[in-house]
Picture 1: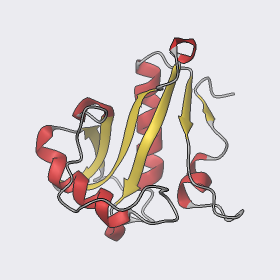
Picture 2: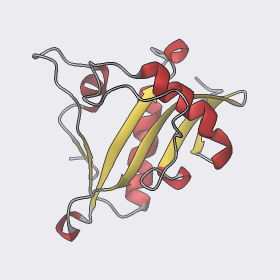
Picture 3: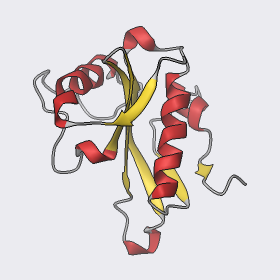
Picture 4: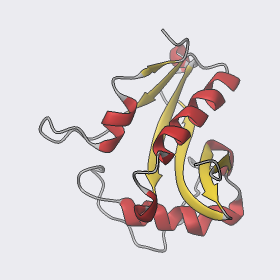
Length: 142
């Protein structure tokens, strides 16, 4: 994994991010219906500065969307992960762990004290995000 880097997304990454997003959609991870393949990745709620991506040899391997919580100002110290995926050909390489660690560092830079991630539970069977993320991450390390 030494060759895998993490960086903030740019507008030029949109096609690669959208392809990963589309390829990794399933009813196990999303309550929303599948969208058309040509749907843009970036929109008014998902901007490049709120997306961290894993890359290797100029190829985008996966991403995590990290943004301030949409809940009122009382939770201004909270950042939420609102999207998280590894490309299908890159799963099982530890990229998810790298992305979550990068999201933690970015959240601390933004003066957050907590990161949240909501995921679809499937009858008691943990999905990949639940296994990686657990019950929440306290940014103080406690």
